[in-house]
Image (cartoon, rainbow, N blue to C red; front, side):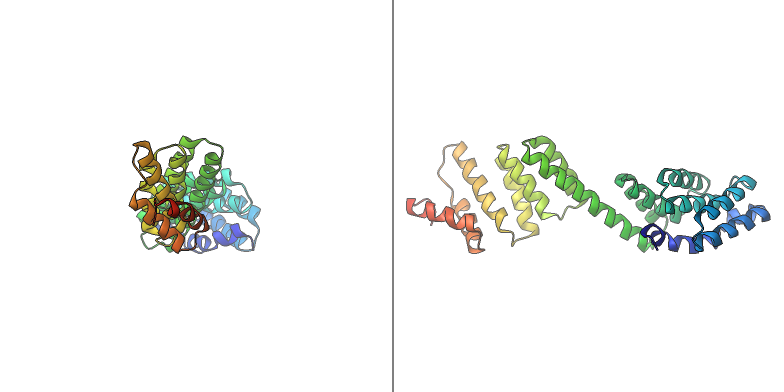
Length: 268
């Protein structure tokens, strides 16, 4: 069974029940085609499901569940845009259908419209706060979207495109405010762009989230040193404390740095 089929298997069990309001107003022949479409889908005959759901729609153009079934069949066959168009129609007819929002979210995610998918999962949750699948899918999509912004920010930072790198890290942090590495990397980019205060603030946040992350202590100490250097002050005790903390955690760069600083009396 394909990942797409697994993703919407639960949906079909709900569609088989039908929407009471829509079913009550539907032509019995339309219901018959819809039921046949569900059976085709369960048997793996997705084109047959599309054909029968289309017949149901031709008889009753307001048959929301038939649009959802046809959209699910198109999605299973890889026609993401056709599926989304059918889900749009189903939601237009029945805007309180949490399940269709959720499966439209799946189609948007497969189309790499991650923001659109998140919006659909959120709407499904608003309609049905007990929809565990919607919470799971939204969290999973946010994870992938966060990764996308994170790695793009990393690439831009390495290329020296600091402002756009920071913008990507901003988005990654917005999606996952507990991502210590995103704060650390954004702080590093700010350090490279000589925004030492901003860098220190980001390293503070990274350390608050993950107190065992030694590079954040090291680079916070370096940023403090550069900030003091800008105004003509000696290396602060606070910076030395950061170097010592990183060194005590086994950070070799900090160990080597202290070996250079201690003989000069700058750090003890």
